[in-house]
Image (cartoon, rainbow, N blue to C red; front, side, top):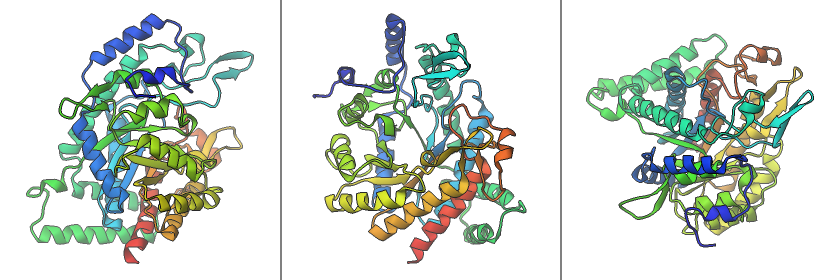
Length: 449
């Protein structure tokens, strides 16, 4: 089918809400399409160029953020803390791997969530499932769970405010390398943290002191106090994505201006379905999540649909197979795809395949399983001679208690303390930074080979 801005509407589509008032939906779409873009084409192309370096092993992708952004929890402090922990992780990874880190947040648009069921039952009451604040409300009432198109307008303005603050943080001094390293030292002072973390921190301290002794400071070298930060989200709600898609005045090409990178989920990656078709027509970098049932042919066909020109930096295949399955599934996929010469960024989402229900009923993820899948991802790539390009995490800058384990030994009983997610369990700030130190070990081992 020839691509048009609205041609996806003629194809099968999954994971979409049912809006009762179609005229109201059309009015919202029209209003959105007249609002300024959130990002512009040049930024998306810059990200694509950076991801091309990831594709060739010259850089590493760090992508992370909330499972789903919330209208109620929207605050400058939450944005700052997420940005802060991602910077901390990036500094550790940059130093260990000796490569630039491409920083992409799941932020400023990550509102819609796929669900395993269209309905949720509590007691004798059955209502539509919560699909994210851009669609309906979390409260278990008929009015909250009824999809409301006006929520797309609220999501747009919250995304615009978030982007404004992120750009200020990235350029206004908060990204100063020396300051970020001081935050890491605060993490390392906690008594549960061992020598393996301190070793990297000590070496980084020495490197910064050496640079300063040579006259390289934040005052005379702007790159030490500024950074580039990109945004991404799952392009699930296609009426919103269509309304935010614009023609670039310089190239004449279509770009989805709701984020720099968009991805397609495991549930909506059907080759002949609406989501793959829609994103095949925009020029942003595109991700696609791949679970344990995927085959090499599945990935080859998706690459042909989403990246027919085999452009480096265009396609990010996000592996999400689970710690128990990745060892059986991923090697054969990499073997086959390596023969094809496809330009693909491979990253690992170690969160979704490792979810389970704790004994107290809380949905959670175990840190050791997350780490195990990450370790397998690196080892398999190194064995197959391909590049482990990045990591994709559901995480927060807050001190939540949603994932068990880690250096601080969060137990199932402690999940009740600060379990705040509206969808999936997230790594807290300490667990995310701990994982960065451990990933740094994997990168460091490769640089020494």
